[in-house]
Image (cartoon, rainbow, N blue to C red; front, side, top):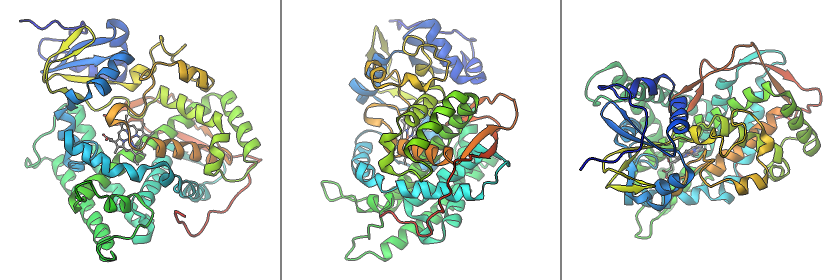
Length: 469
Ligand code: HEM
C-alpha cells in the first residue's frame, strides 16, 4: 500500500531537496515548516526525511513515543568515530545506563562548585585584553570555554598545567570537529580504513586524545586508595566513582568516550551562545544599557558569584533570547524510526529519518511575536509559562535532553556578567555576520570586535589558586 506522506518540497528526481537543504539548512527547515505545516516530508538523496514543526509533535517524538526512535545512523557514524559509544551517540539500554551513571556529576550542588572557576578563568582572559584592541570574539569565547571545560572535566591544570593539556585536547577536538563538519556537508562518511586525508587527520586526533586521556585516567587509578579513586571535585572523578545498581563501573574506554563527548558537547555550544550574544548586544545599545544598569546595581564592580545569578534576571533573559535566535544546536541529531510510528495524522515508516530544529521552532510567528527581532524583554515568567513546551528548546527534550543544561546556563550568565561589567564589545566593522550551520551554529568568519573598557569597571585580580571548594 502506498504510504500517505505529508506534503513538502519536491526537489529533483535524483537528489530530492539535498541541494536546497545544503544551501542554507536552517532557512530551508524554517521555510518548509512555514510553507507546508506541522509535519513536512522531503527527500535528501535516498534519505526519507520528516521534519517536525509543531511542539505537540516534537513531544510525541522526544517524549511520548521516544523509545520508538534512536539516533540516526549518519550521526552515529560521523560522531561515533571520535566519541565512540558515549552519551550523545549511544542508544537504548546502554544509553540509559550511562545516563544514570553520569547524572550525579551534573547534580546542581555539584556543578555550582564550578561557578568560581568560571569567573576566575574569565578574569584571566580579560587580564590579556587591551583597551581599544580588536579581537575575534568567537576565538576568545572558544578558548575561554575550553579552559573551563578542561578544568571542570578533569582538573587540567593539576595534571600538566591547564595550557598544555587543554591545548593538546583542544587541537585534537578541533580537528575532529572540522572533519565531522565536512562529513556532514557531504552527507556521508567514508569507512575509516580508506586512507583519505580526513580519515588520517581524524585517526591522528583520536590517537592524540586517547594518549592524553589514558594518562589522566591512569594517574587517577595510581593514587586510588583501596580501589577508590580520590574525588578531586571534577566531573571525571564522579564518572570514575559512579557505580550501577549491579555494581558495574565504567571501564577506561567508556570513560574516555564520555569525557570526549562532554568535552565536544560542552564548549563550542556555550562559546557560540556567548559569541552571538555579544554580536546582538553590539547591535542593540538599548539592551546593552539595560544590562549595564542591572550589573552596576547588583554587582557594583564586584565579580559575579553564584549567589548573584538570581538577582540578574535581565542577563538571563538576554541569554535566552540570544539562544532563541541563534540556538547553538540548530538541529537535533536525526532520529531513526525503529518501527512504523503514528505521529499526528501520519504514519512515519520504519527506517525514516526525523528532523527537529530548534532554529526553525524558535522563529515560528505563532509562538514568538516578531520572531526575527531580538527582544530579551519577551522572556517574562508569564510568557515562558504560557509558551507551549517544545516551542523553545535550545537544549532538546525528553530522555536525551542536554545533560549539561544547567552547567551551560550558569556558565553563560556568569561569563556575560563578568565580561560586560568590565568591557563593551563593539563591532569592528559594519559587515553583517552570517551563520555557518555546522555541528553548531557558528558565526561564519568569526566576529571582530573592539574591546572598550568601561569607566565604572573595578578590576578584581584573578585568584592564583583555583579550586572547586
Ligand atoms: C549552550 C550550551 C549548550 C547547548 C545549546 C546544548 C544543546 C544540546 C542539545 C540540543 C542536546 C540534545 C541533542 C539531541 O537530542 O540530539 C544536547 C545533548 C547533550 N549535551 Fe548539550 N548543550 C550545551 C551545553 C552542554 C554542556 C556544557 C555539556 C557538558 C558539560 C553538554 C553535554 C551534552 C551531552 C552529554 C548530551 C547528550 C545527552 C544524552 O543524549 O543523554 N552540553 N545538548
